[in-house]
Amino acid sequence: MVFGGGNFNRAFGCWMIDLLNEQAGFNGGIVLVKPTPGRDYTALREQDGLYHVILNGVAAGQLVNETKLISAIDQVVHPYLDWAQYLATAEEDSLRYIISNTTEAGIRFESKDQLSDTPPSSFPAKVSLWLHHRFKHFSGASDKGCVFLPCELIADNGDTLKDCILRYAELWNLSTDFQDWVSAHCVFCNTLVDRIVTGYPSDDIDDIQSKIGLEDQMLVAGEPYHSWVIQGPKQLAEELPFDKIGLAVKWVDQLKNYRAQKVKILNGAHTSMVPIGYLAGKVSVKEAIESAEIGQFIESLLQEEVWPTLDFSTEELQDFTSKTLDRFRNPFLFHKLLDIALNSISKFKTRLLPSLLGFVDKKGDCPPKISLALAALIVMYKGEWQGEQTPLRDNADVLAFFQSLWADSPDLSQLVKQVLAQTQFWDQDLNAIPGLAELVATYIEEIQSNGMVATLATVLSSTKS
Image 1 (cartoon, helix red, strand yellow):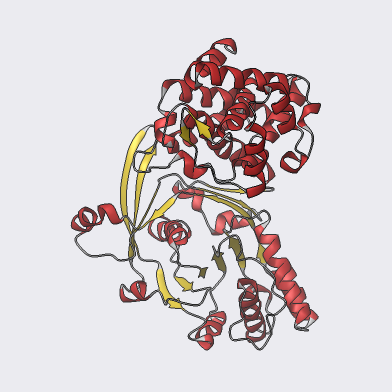
Image 2: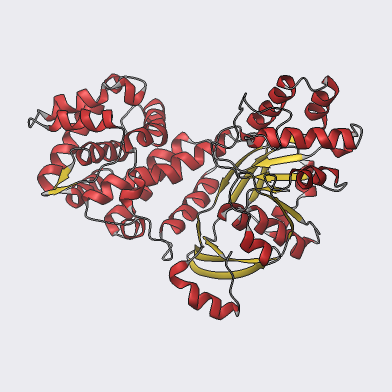
């Protein structure tokens, strides 16, 4: 069962199940459930659940262009239009796996949801009623529990979903036998997913449909890269042998390190690239990473200052970084730097500050390249660069702080110290890090005097080993 027929699920979970059917004899059919009111997946119903996935991008340095017909969806169910049909799927003897992608806000507990609702509003409440129906239908049989593989981008998504279900069981005074069955015989895996899915390729649709020979209203495009890290029992890897057919699916004991790797390398590279690239006159991620200075800067930042803070082998880090840079070079994606720039202050705190602090802890010095990224960020938040206004998007209080700070041509040393002292930005006073304020102030002065590209060259030259 798959909750959510949006672009991501169709180009990720459904795509993987279809590949298992084709290459591993899995023979799995998908019941696709609409988790929200509104639309009825009419186009998908009209196409009998069939649609194409197109993957365009770069993998191992080579261009990839693949088209695959997905035929794993057997049934489309809309709980808001036919609640009885939805509950009836709980009586399917062989149904075992439940994949969901209901947005980050989807896994939430709503106390207003009632046992009598048909349906209740939240996704976990719908699942709770479905599980309760299944529990009763099969008289609490231990082998009728389900494996949940949530793809929502929140930490501990499986644990959170389980907690919501048990809270509903208590709210609705469902039996302790049911609660014990959920705890003992249902498996809730925490997962971490990654794939850029761009959706319906409107600009190229005529050429695409000419090549596939038919009109596909549900066609969805994405990048070749995909990653699914699943924290769950190892025997599930045998039941769902994704890795055996070459899919990038890992079954692990814990997700913490993998989440840190993604945030520090992929997201950290994006967040450092935004102010550096913007001040260097670049517009897109691809344009920035393919420029000699910025490309070299990002690679060295990751290798020299981020890698030492991660608990992976050099080979694993190199592989993840190489795939990340391939994704940045994807000629089929136009990813504007200013689109990524949204809320850059909080993104720096989440994505780059942990690496900065980890580097200081391990090396005893400030990381020069992350410090340069911070300097460039402060310059960008001046709101003006080379005579043009910078279209910043951030919390109003953040923008007001930087506007006031830059208003009176301040002393750069004092300006940096005030930024670093903002505990509401960083949850700590970064002036406590020896040498950071001085280094960032020096970089800001050089950026303003010599420009971003010249500053990059100076920093890269001075930090060569």
